[in-house]
Length: 85
Image (cartoon, rainbow, N blue to C red):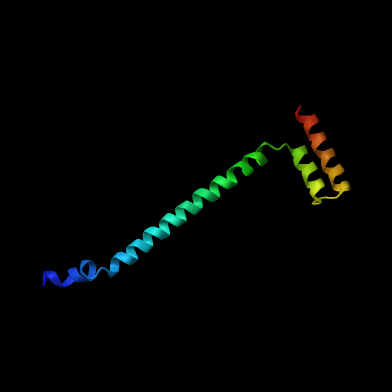
């Protein structure tokens, strides 16, 4: 009776293929996270160094805000920086 369960896992070899597919799946998944994370990190570091005024100018240049919005928000930033400084 002890030899009855062994062919299911070791005898036919069909489980080796499934095992290999799982290893391949995890390797591809980990490699994807590593490459995606490496590509995103410099962009995020650049944005974290951007000052509020630079961000505001960039948003105006890209058309996200209107010139009137830019002037209003710039005035608020300047007012707040005068209070804290």
